[in-house]
Amino acid sequence: MRKIFLIVFALLFVACSSNVAYIEQKANIQVSSSVNKLGEKVYEKCIDCHGTHGEHIALGKSKVIRGWEAKRVSDALYRFKDDSYSGTMKKVIQSKISNLSDEEIEQVSLYVSKLK
Image 1: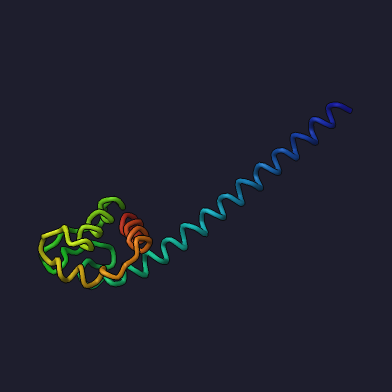
Image 2: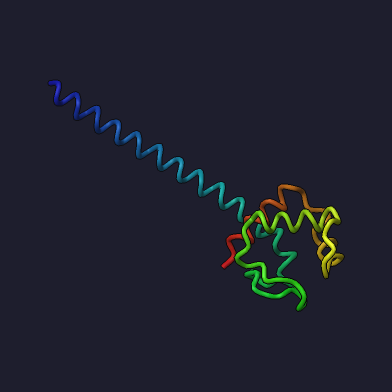
């Protein structure tokens, strides 16, 4: 009787554990897809100069942004937004990002960091 109880308990434990893992995985997929959608939407403003995958030297003057880490992207965007960046094309970029919220900057930074 004790062996049956232990077997049933073990099966219930495994079933519950795998269900929790499935729910967590599904939640992560939903969160990451919503993040990608916002980041992708914001990045649409950047495609003309930086290319679909961040592969272009924007207007022949900037750096290729594909492969940048999210922090590097967000740091650059915040510097453009707060007018502490003095590089080329400053006014063009400021006109595109001046109305972005912090959330939009963070999400587009994550999106750019995933470009391949």
